[in-house]
Structure formats: structure tokens, C-alpha cells
Length: 315
Ligand SMILES: Nc1ncnc2c1ncn2[C@@H]1O[C@H](COP(=O)(O)OP(=O)(O)O)[C@@H](O)[C@H]1O
Ligand SMILES: [Mg+2]
Image: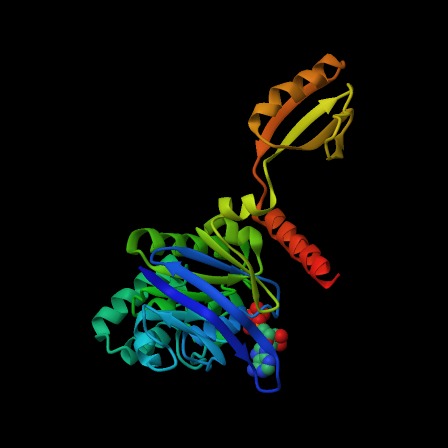
């Protein structure tokens, strides 16, 4: 089932800024979708449109088949949203905040408390449950905002830069929680971030956005094949002849007499020949490994590709 759908979704803000330009998206249930792009790309605008917090200009969008502009309350029952500026109450304790939001969704006090304590434990907030939110650190506040978004057990979770202010350990906690939700409960996750390494750890599908337009979307393998034919071979070598005719490579000096070399290959079948050539020319090979390109490399290659396409179109 398609949980989140955008069809030529366009948003022009009053004043004329086109934040989203004919965006198409289609996200299946249970996916962890990474919506990736630099600041100002349009990610937060999309989250607001999907949750009925803004009106679209053109096109359409839906969440579980519901139009968020027509029935925002129906979407809110199914969706949890974590934005950069979640509204919560500074003078209430962490637990009291969650109790309040549970009551908004008509969940019984006992059940809300049970859920709240369980989520707080998973997010390492249990010790701070009776502390006023006003005394929470930024990271604790962000985690409580996630707890708040989960209290009504949403079927889809929109996370807008959820780990941007978190230390590595808290970020890992949040990551694990998100993965777990998707795996054990089939919760769909719509994750906006500009942190590509973080996204690559948890996402199953991606949409790359830049200046309001989708550059590409799909799984990591699908994105990979849009810009790279093969693999990167990493070699640690010493001496020998490092010239491989017709090949691009970069040499990175990593230590005494030892060079690390990256070579682009089309398939693993090329590896034995390359290694044999090194050895035949008198070189020593200490380490060989083959890597697929990282999301970060794919992302920048896609941006480059888009730029050169635009240049061609201009000519
Ligand atoms: N309320 C607003 N009024 C006018 N322009 C806005 C408003 N909110 C965002 N924008 C602009 O829309 C573009 C997309 O913003 P946003 O969706 O916040 O991007 P992101 O979340 O990817 O950083 C930016 O150029 C931003 O300045
Ligand atoms: Mg944003």
C-alpha cells in the first residue's frame, strides 16, 4: 500500500518563493524513506503539506489516501510529526508533557503512562521523567519531542532533522528506535535530513531534493546505477607500476612506503587482472577490497550530473 503520495506537488509561498516544484513521491508502507537535500531544498515544506499545516498551490498529496488539507485531523490520528520546533510545555515535567499529549488523543491515563515510560526508557529519558522540560538539554528536548510523536502509536512518523542536535550516542538511540519501529510494527518513516551518512545507516528508500525539485528517487542500488557503473577498488600497495591505461584513480599517501589507491572498476571480474599487473611490475599488494559508492558519493555525482544536464539544455 502507498502511504505517502505526492503528485506534481507544488508550493509557492506568499511572496513568490517556489519551495516545491512539481514533486512526485510514492512511499510504501513500512519503508524508511530518506528525504535528502541541503537547507532550503523544500523538505520541511513537504512535511507541513503532508500534515495539513500548509495549503498546497498545485498538484496533490495524500497520506494513507487522506487529503491532509481536507481532513487534517484524520491525518493527525495516523501520523506523528517531529519538527525542529515542537510545541511542548516548559513548566511541565517530561512525563507530564507526554500525559498531556496522550489525553489529546483520548488515550486512557493508565495506557498513556505505560507507553510514556516505555518510550522514555528507550530514549534514555527515564531518569529525567519528573524534571521540568525547561531544564532539559537540547538533545533531551529533541528526544522528548520524538516520544511525544510516538505516544499515539502512529502508523507513519515524519521526522524533520531528528538527530541534528544530538550527540552520537543519543543519535544512535534514536536510530535504533526508528529501525525497530519500522521492523517490528511496520511503521512507515519519512525522514528529512541533510546528514547523508546518518540516512544511509537506516533508510530503505531515498528521495533526493534540490531547490524544490526531485533529483532522483529509489533504493541505494537504484540510485547507484544512475551515476556509477561499477565499484571502487581500494588497494594498499608499495612500489610497482601503478599505471593502469585508460583508468581514473587517485593516490592517497597513507604511511611510510605504503600508498592507498582507489581504482574505479566495472565489475569484480577486473580485480584479479589489476592485482596481477601490480605484482608483475614488482609491486607489493597489502590489501584489496571492493566498495560500492557511498550515498554521499552518489548524491554529489547526481548533483553534478544534473548541473551538466542543465548546462547542455542552456546551450
Ligand atoms: N513561510 C515561508 N515563507 C516564505 N518562504 C519560505 C517559508 N518557509 C520556507 N520558505 C522558503 O522555502 C524554501 C524551502 O524551505 P524549507 O522547506 O524550510 O527547506 P528545508 O526544510 O529543506 O531546509 C526556502 O527557500 C525557504 O527560505
Ligand atoms: Mg527544514
